[in-house]
Length: 439
Image 1: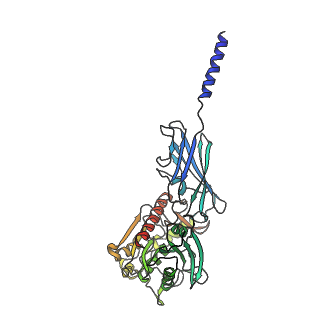
Image 2 (image 1 turned 30 degrees about the vertical axis):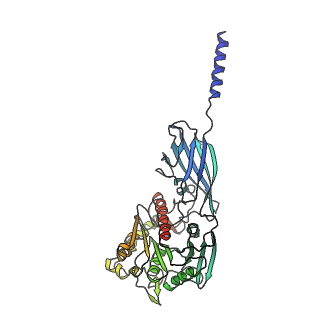
Image 3 (image 1 turned 60 degrees about the vertical axis):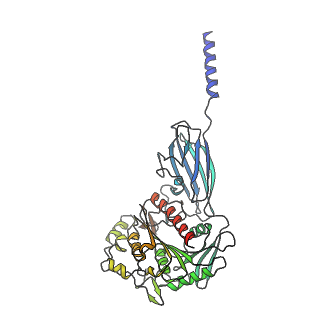
């Protein structure tokens, strides 16, 4: 009898346990465009239980990218990435965009460029959550990289080479010229489309490195840029008034040159650019000419030694150009090569990077800031390196250096992935605000 009672008690206990078994955790995901926070919430966890949230995508080359973050559930058994910092993961701190910008390639995967190879209109993600080493839920998420309806057209007319990115609708729209840096060729088309999605008619202007253009950044005529300004202003899709110019690095230098010499420019954003003219990349002389004459370039009496750069390269570490690219210039040397931005009545935004290891952008943009007096805002992005103008929240895991010869020779950009991501998002926001206010 006692045995039968014992068996009945066990059966009732097991039935009760089965009736109260915890259901599987639930995953809710959402979000807007690439410059907006992700919404990822996990519910149905035990208080304090750890859950790892991950994101995965595949780029244009078929390479897998992933990010992850492990959280402890709150007292309600929830994880909300918008309000919680991970215990560990591919990013630190509370950041609802962290799963985007911290995505990286598998360990050992060769990296040849700072940016992910993403050229479509959207980023297709899979968001998942692991508990106890097993995936308990996953869901797809599509993140648009620009507003729908953006149109892009290659341009090769009137001697100009580039891409025209137009917002949806007939317009007219404020015009903006986008300039790339010392890599040459067409500037970042994804950034051009992103800015077009914000309501601007964007001309991504190549100014060297393509057929019909100078082969290198040597003696590029200022008139080429002023012709692009006039061409864009005359387009039927572009509204009346002056246009804006935004450039990165050497493109930021060219943006200041156009601000100084092109009357049709009403707003200039120089991102890690230079307020002094740099010498040509290959030939002796200047990078820029006006009416056939060189704009006086920076000539440094004691340029410093390249030993540190070469030693870093020999050790397989990214070489730093900082010591030979302007830090040794005297104030008089910088002043003699200064771009005369004070000629312009345009609005100026100057953005430099505190940890720029490619060149001393803060000191170089101070040259322009001094000449503009209180007319220019000079923003120094804390902890950031050189590569801070891109579509916000795309992976920045490899933006601290760039490959000059992939797998062999790297040049330092500086910063950290997290600081570069924050600086990129803030810089692009400031650029959009500048053009909305001034154009």
